[in-house]
Amino acid sequence: MQLNFATRKENKRKTLDGEWSAVIHNPPESVTPMIWSQTRTGSWVKVPKKVYLTANIWYGTHGHSKNERIIRAVAKDTCLIYMNSAVNSAPYCTGKIKLTVIYYSPKKTFDMDNKGYFWGKLFQDYLVKRERLISDTVEYVEEVHYIYKNSVETKVEFKLLQL
Image 1 (cartoon, rainbow, N blue to C red):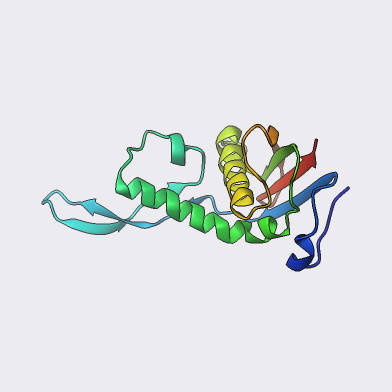
Image 2 (image 1 turned 120 degrees about the horizontal axis):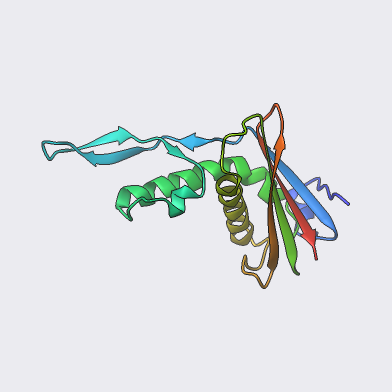
């Protein structure tokens, strides 16, 4: 059963009953924030740095510098723009759930775990932040699945299932 909600006000009373899904069309693959970098002469300048939106943004070989924290923040802010409607339309999850992240893409040369984890983690974090999910611990999110589907259009689909 797929739940559709007409307004945000209506959502305040809706809880997850069965299955719910939302799709983000054409999600960004990378962001290019301006970050401070030291030149060979020792001066500091702002330069663009392209960062791919995968799990490596948290677990790559990057250091824990101020610039890396800025990059992660920019990536999360960028993705929030794309996730707003999905998270705002999500029902309130009061029990245990299963999250499925389906990544649709014509490309077949990427690590699904990196894409799935990135989008799944952000989605859970935003659900908690918007109080749609009490916590993203295993007490409430018992299962997380990542699925790839070949498609002409790149999109991410999130499915929540009440357990």
